[in-house]
Length: 132
Image (cartoon, rainbow, N blue to C red):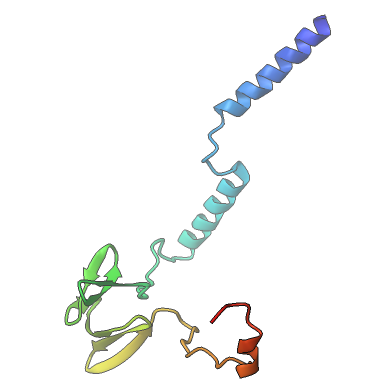
Protein backbone atom coordinates (compact mmCIF):
# COMPACT_ATOMS: atom_id res chain seq x y z
CA UNK A 1 0.00 0.00 0.00
CA UNK A 2 2.91 2.33 0.80
CA UNK A 3 4.42 1.78 -2.63
CA UNK A 4 1.08 2.63 -4.24
CA UNK A 5 0.90 5.88 -2.25
CA UNK A 6 4.46 6.78 -3.27
CA UNK A 7 3.68 6.02 -6.91
CA UNK A 8 0.52 8.14 -6.74
CA UNK A 9 2.42 11.04 -5.13
CA UNK A 10 5.12 10.87 -7.83
CA UNK A 11 2.49 10.87 -10.59
CA UNK A 12 0.67 13.86 -9.08
CA UNK A 13 3.96 15.73 -8.72
CA UNK A 14 4.83 15.15 -12.39
CA UNK A 15 1.32 16.25 -13.43
CA UNK A 16 1.62 19.44 -11.36
CA UNK A 17 4.87 20.32 -13.21
CA UNK A 18 3.09 19.84 -16.56
CA UNK A 19 0.15 21.99 -15.45
CA UNK A 20 2.48 24.87 -14.55
CA UNK A 21 4.17 24.88 -17.97
CA UNK A 22 2.69 27.39 -20.44
CA UNK A 23 1.87 25.56 -23.70
CA UNK A 24 2.19 28.77 -25.74
CA UNK A 25 5.85 29.38 -24.88
CA UNK A 26 8.64 28.22 -27.15
CA UNK A 27 10.74 25.25 -26.10
CA UNK A 28 14.02 26.28 -24.43
CA UNK A 29 16.16 24.87 -27.28
CA UNK A 30 14.28 26.94 -29.87
CA UNK A 31 14.45 30.08 -27.73
CA UNK A 32 18.23 29.77 -27.40
CA UNK A 33 18.63 29.14 -31.15
CA UNK A 34 16.54 32.23 -31.96
CA UNK A 35 18.53 34.33 -29.50
CA UNK A 36 21.80 33.17 -31.07
CA UNK A 37 20.52 33.98 -34.58
CA UNK A 38 19.37 37.47 -33.59
CA UNK A 39 22.69 38.12 -31.84
CA UNK A 40 24.57 37.03 -34.97
CA UNK A 41 22.48 39.30 -37.21
CA UNK A 42 22.95 42.22 -34.80
CA UNK A 43 26.70 41.63 -34.79
CA UNK A 44 26.80 41.61 -38.60
CA UNK A 45 25.00 44.97 -38.71
CA UNK A 46 21.79 43.69 -40.25
CA UNK A 47 18.66 45.54 -39.20
CA UNK A 48 16.16 43.66 -37.07
CA UNK A 49 13.20 45.08 -39.02
CA UNK A 50 12.72 43.74 -42.54
CA UNK A 51 12.80 46.36 -45.28
CA UNK A 52 10.61 44.35 -47.64
CA UNK A 53 7.94 46.68 -49.02
CA UNK A 54 6.43 44.13 -51.40
CA UNK A 55 2.73 44.52 -52.00
CA UNK A 56 0.99 41.52 -50.49
CA UNK A 57 -2.71 42.40 -50.41
CA UNK A 58 -5.28 44.09 -52.62
CA UNK A 59 -8.85 44.72 -51.50
CA UNK A 60 -11.89 45.58 -53.62
CA UNK A 61 -14.55 47.57 -51.77
CA UNK A 62 -17.35 49.76 -53.06
CA UNK A 63 -16.34 49.21 -56.67
CA UNK A 64 -12.79 50.49 -56.05
CA UNK A 65 -9.48 48.71 -55.65
CA UNK A 66 -7.10 49.41 -52.77
CA UNK A 67 -3.62 48.28 -51.81
CA UNK A 68 -3.37 47.35 -48.14
CA UNK A 69 0.05 48.10 -46.69
CA UNK A 70 0.91 48.29 -42.98
CA UNK A 71 -2.78 48.37 -42.00
CA UNK A 72 -3.75 51.25 -44.30
CA UNK A 73 -5.65 51.32 -47.60
CA UNK A 74 -4.13 53.14 -50.57
CA UNK A 75 -6.20 53.96 -53.68
CA UNK A 76 -5.16 54.78 -57.24
CA UNK A 77 -3.44 58.17 -57.29
CA UNK A 78 -2.09 57.97 -53.73
CA UNK A 79 1.57 57.75 -52.76
CA UNK A 80 2.90 54.42 -51.49
CA UNK A 81 6.53 54.35 -50.30
CA UNK A 82 7.42 57.29 -52.55
CA UNK A 83 5.69 55.93 -55.65
CA UNK A 84 2.30 56.94 -57.09
CA UNK A 85 -0.21 54.13 -57.59
CA UNK A 86 -1.25 54.10 -61.26
CA UNK A 87 -3.38 50.97 -61.52
CA UNK A 88 -4.57 48.12 -59.30
CA UNK A 89 -5.78 44.72 -60.51
CA UNK A 90 -6.23 41.38 -58.82
CA UNK A 91 -2.83 40.20 -60.10
CA UNK A 92 -0.60 43.30 -59.85
CA UNK A 93 -0.17 46.94 -58.94
CA UNK A 94 1.43 49.49 -61.26
CA UNK A 95 3.55 52.15 -59.53
CA UNK A 96 5.09 55.32 -61.03
CA UNK A 97 8.39 56.33 -59.53
CA UNK A 98 10.89 58.81 -61.03
CA UNK A 99 8.89 58.91 -64.27
CA UNK A 100 9.06 55.14 -64.72
CA UNK A 101 6.09 52.80 -64.33
CA UNK A 102 6.81 49.41 -62.84
CA UNK A 103 4.52 46.44 -62.33
CA UNK A 104 4.57 44.84 -58.89
CA UNK A 105 3.01 41.36 -59.09
CA UNK A 106 1.05 40.18 -56.06
CA UNK A 107 1.95 36.55 -56.60
CA UNK A 108 5.45 36.34 -58.04
CA UNK A 109 5.93 33.37 -60.31
CA UNK A 110 2.19 32.68 -60.57
CA UNK A 111 0.47 33.24 -63.89
CA UNK A 112 -3.26 33.42 -64.43
CA UNK A 113 -4.29 31.53 -67.56
CA UNK A 114 -7.66 30.67 -69.03
CA UNK A 115 -8.81 27.13 -68.25
CA UNK A 116 -7.72 24.46 -70.68
CA UNK A 117 -10.28 23.19 -73.16
CA UNK A 118 -11.88 19.90 -72.10
CA UNK A 119 -10.10 16.90 -73.57
CA UNK A 120 -13.34 15.00 -74.12
CA UNK A 121 -15.69 15.27 -77.04
CA UNK A 122 -19.46 15.24 -77.37
CA UNK A 123 -19.43 11.48 -76.71
CA UNK A 124 -18.21 12.19 -73.14
CA UNK A 125 -21.34 14.23 -72.52
CA UNK A 126 -23.48 11.16 -73.25
CA UNK A 127 -21.56 9.12 -70.67
CA UNK A 128 -22.43 11.62 -67.98
CA UNK A 129 -24.81 10.43 -65.27
CA UNK A 130 -26.48 13.83 -65.12
CA UNK A 131 -29.91 14.02 -66.64
CA UNK A 132 -30.42 16.62 -69.35
